[in-house]
Amino acid sequence: MNDVVTVLIISIPLVPFLIIYIVGAALSVTRWRRYPTPSRLAFIAFVMFSARSFLGLARNWLLHRRDALAEDKETFIFYLGIMGSIETLVAIVAWILLLIAFYSRFDMSERHVASGEEFSEISRREG
Image 1 (cartoon, helix red, strand yellow):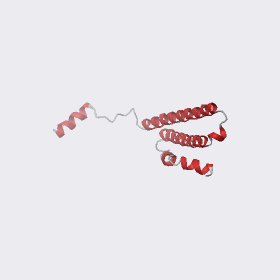
Image 2 (cartoon, rainbow, N blue to C red; image 1 turned 45 degrees about the vertical axis):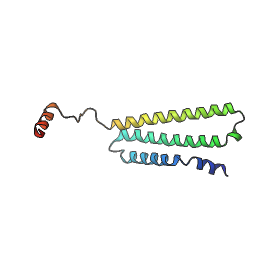
Image 3 (cartoon, rainbow, N blue to C red; image 1 turned 60 degrees about the vertical axis):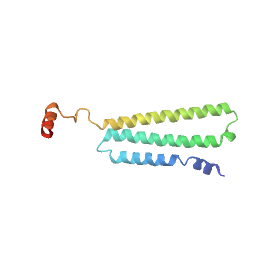
Image 4 (spheres, helix red, strand yellow; image 1 turned 30 degrees about the horizontal axis):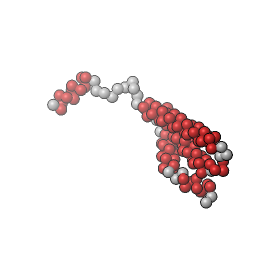
């Protein structure tokens, strides 16, 4: 079987994630004007998640071609370890950006908690 077809078949589980990342990036672009900072951070995060998926695709290709590419198995394993570390680092940074984007939408200066007077007034009406 052709190498490209084999790698694509191996990488089928990545497709749903890529779809989610593309939809997430599109949603962040559509909300860019209303929430500029969170949208930018989310967009960067989803692009990084997509890049991580393509790194996974490259890793799958390397694993499929390991016999043709690797004269020295220790060197090959070393490079796979580096790729795995890069994938992990990209994912960590993307998650951090996504969390910052999510929590920066909330204005921390305005608390949406009822003050003591409002709470007592609500309690009297219900009680």
